Image (cartoon, rainbow, N blue to C red; front, side, top):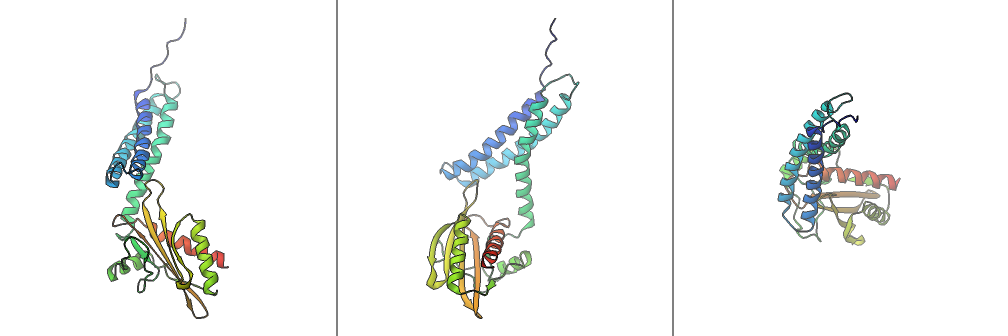
Length: 242
């Protein structure tokens, strides 16, 4: 006589469905914005609700693990584990988003030279650096962001800077060696949000001084992304120059 099969753990299955749904919604929200189906605020709101769903899936997966543990009356342990692992991604993304929103200043235009910031001449909106208030917030949050001094000729430094821009996968908008000016754009992974980067190479004390400015086209805060981009660029350029 065959042994009757154990019933499935409903929380375990619900966790799996919810976590899969959350990931699908987040991916679709970014894809839909890229394709012009909806405004980015709609996509972000959908992602927020997806994160709530992933949080619920996380709780349900723990309940499902308890119900379907070895020797328990229900089955579905594998579904609960998969649901738990899948839910961690959206939940971690939401936690990081909230943390960076609270940890970084509400600015989205960062420059290593706040007194004479590089200008965006070839971008859709060639506006000036925001000003003293933004500079004060920037200096408090990112005191390490200053122009990079290198003991190299301007032409060689410009070529190195342009090579770093291309290696990072940024889109070159303008490259003017005689002005020591490079303008480029970088895009975020999911939504493809565009950030603008301006690089200025000018002679200084027998070498060069490299100033970088990075700003976001959308939103009023950047969650530290622009400062991170500038820091990574200067570190790579310094290493290449060495």
